[in-house]
Image 1 (tube, one colour):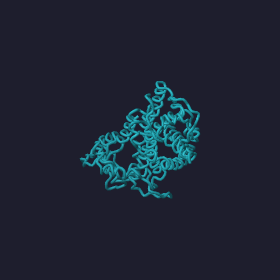
Image 2 (tube, one colour; image 1 turned 180 degrees about the horizontal axis):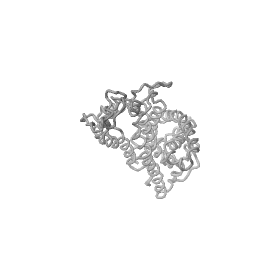
Image 3 (cartoon, rainbow, N blue to C red; image 1 turned 180 degrees about the vertical axis):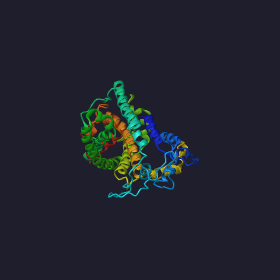
Image 4 (cartoon, rainbow, N blue to C red; image 1 turned 60 degrees about the vertical axis):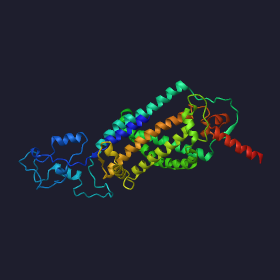
Length: 394
């Protein structure tokens, strides 16, 4: 899974348009009457930066226009290409009733790399990640089987999570599942669902998915805060985690290592949810409020200051981004991190349901078999039993 995550991140980084800082040699465009050359076209197809000032600086200028007798000449500097270039470079006099930072941007031609990545590598590698996790868990189940309670069941139960904790967990789980499903519909719908169900059915589904995704996101963020407040104290690393990791949590046999209320594996899940879920939330807020909460221009500026893009041979990243570009980067980051968290949650669901006997009761009813607690969380169980004993003796 780590390799797939690295592949996803590297794919995005390599897809980011880079602004080279080295001075470019002027291009001789006399043979094309001042228009773009084959070299310009080839560089643009390769995703390289093209100095298009020869186009943006002469929009609608009769003095700068090529003579009518020349190749690709203009008539008085007012040809259709000039008009469209004026729209593209925001030099045309545009009047609109809409108000906002992007209201007068009629043509935004920097999104093709985003569209191609979104429909290609993002779906491809994201699908591999989720499918690979399901296959991996299926193979693990066939080899290891369900993790059973080793000792004799006592018939007694111990309170694992109270009702408020379970509410926060299920609010987080339910909202994340809805967000995952609606997000996948939005991301892959045009490519996968329209051919299967048609445009009209998908249109209805897409509108509903967008509404659910935008509104359920608030429940997810609220639940994320609640879960953090309730459990962060129990998920701080300690010495027992090292022993748990060295013994593989006892999943492969050899007994279960001692653990407190949360073992090292559960702590990894917790921090994955908090950190990745937090990142998803921030990028989601940036998508909901792109003009108020842009996040990538300042991020690229900090990365440039650290020298990380230069170290990877990418040159300096662009630090002046239009609202559309901010949304493109935010959407990709939002989707990539979501794919990673979905893969982790699939593993979490497996362990908490069919993968381990007695585990579901912790969040189902809040209570677990005493023997299960003694095997998987012996330190925590001993503390709870000691408190009960002391309370009973007073």
